[in-house]
Length: 113
Ligand SMILES: [Zn+2]
Image (cartoon, rainbow, N blue to C red; front, side, top):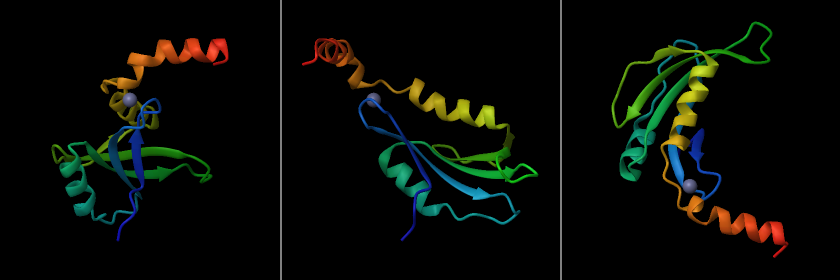
């Protein structure tokens, strides 16, 4: 059994958008076979994100991110902001069926229905 560290999803419709395995960047290899195969079966992207903490240990200072599916890439350095934008792109590129009814839903909420 494995755990999936992160499943990015749409907060409107609940659709899963991608998987991320995370690991502290201690120079060791992180196994990702099951995550990559799961992503392939789901047709969703998957990434491996190694992170480094700040000196005080309270935050993350940098990432090294590899794509696992649909392509396989070597890890490349990213700032936290770049990593955040990468994950945000999953949401931006998602065509959400929830937006089709968003106006109706917001009107119902406004009316208290
Ligand atoms: Zn959606």
